Image (cartoon, rainbow, N blue to C red):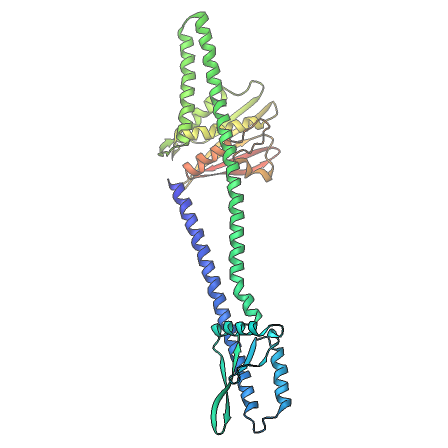
Length: 385
């Protein structure tokens, strides 16, 4: 349940950050557009003042000045139209409207009025002040582009999010498929040995009838089946941690492992830890994790002989467990990959043992597992609980 809660909280956090960034982008954009529009309004008012000065001169026929203003107006980056009140016609305009028809210009005037209030141009006639023209102006091309930027950014982020979601979903499904396949194969492998043994004992009973020795071996194989079933049951359910004797657990695992080392290999297993080291954990799952690590160490030793050493140190905060072997080592690029589902350094491996071990240590026991060091002379896997 805690895993799903963390997942939901992470999604909510990412969504909140996304919304915050989007709001911030639009606010910054709005502030920038407002600042630019204020500058545009100031420039338009300057044009208004300039043309009023020309029109209200004593000599209204100052054509050079008017021609200079019209040339200046055509070169401005602000869309401007000066329209006479009576008659209702365009007096002059900037070059933005040179290729537009009259109807298109009228539509542009309507659009500009929705953004900026037109500026009246006053003239003095017969000692009366009256409005002779109106100056209409709109957003510059830069403002229009800036207004589109947040929408482009949102679209880009949305596209990246979709692509990332598709990528991570496909990757997660691949990992899940690899894990499921590995678990099924691991289950078949784990069950195969005791089942084959039981089938052999059944045939033996049929031929030689029942004896106490056969019953003893059958009970051992049934205990193995029960242990395997218990392991897979616990890995998929909520586990309650309790105080366990780590030293005794390791002793049991070493005793079990030593008796099952291939006769073709002379492997010594050494221990370096004190008795009665206690931790919070789950016996069945920790024994599974430790057995996986020891089994990997045995398989990594290609020579006829080698050494596996298990050492434990403890302080008030953590218990440090080291699994050291003299095997062939792991390439540094694969130190993190070996714990991923489906990844195996062995040709016949399924890549599930170490991924389950990591789940047991990290998710169930809230610990850490990693490659401490590795070279041609061997590997050290470290667990912190």
